[in-house]
Amino acid sequence: MESVSGKRRRNSRIQQSVLAIIGTAGLLTVAMLAPNIFQAFPRIIGKKRYKLAFQARTAVQRLVIKGHVQWVAQNGKKYLEITESGRRALDLFMARTTAPARKKQQWDRRYRMVIFDIPERRRAVRERLRMLMNEFGFLRLQDSIWISPYDCEELVALVKAELKVGKDILYVIADSIENDVWIRKHFNLPR
Image (cartoon, rainbow, N blue to C red; front, side, top):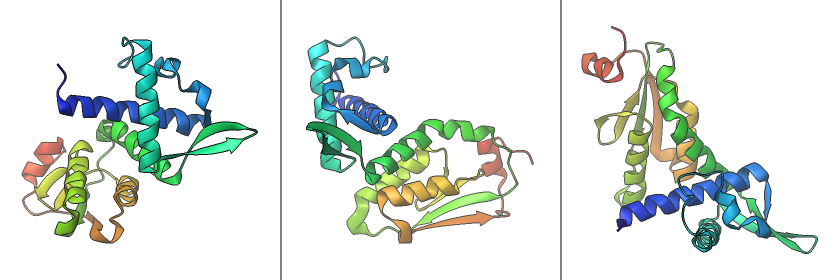
């Protein structure tokens, strides 16, 4: 039996897959929302076709509710179109999947810090930000201070836009940090 968190991860992957297809295709006709849509995603294949069709429709409904896609009518047909919010979510997803590749970058002997102060009333956003920082390979210096040795300004801009916390996050580039031996060791950086 699959756990609740496992189902959420699977549903999230399905939504991201559908969003990626819509984002790549531009407009996606309703007729394409069939089980064949998932043939490009091997993790999801293997389930019964009717279940895939249901999951595709459910994923689309959730993406519409989130505002990531919208229905448009052209020439008497209904199509799905990615919204600006959906484009940002897709960019963030793509950045998340390529985050490990950043470690191959050459270190320029500068640290990038993300410092944030998000009010208690937006606690869920604050926790999501911490989760993203961890997923992107940042090191936690304090609860609200995260560090990376690699250029990540565009990534931080994407996170700010997606979480709508632009004024609550500072991006800092530092030439040195006192007693940084443990930081260099964590990131496998030269001395």
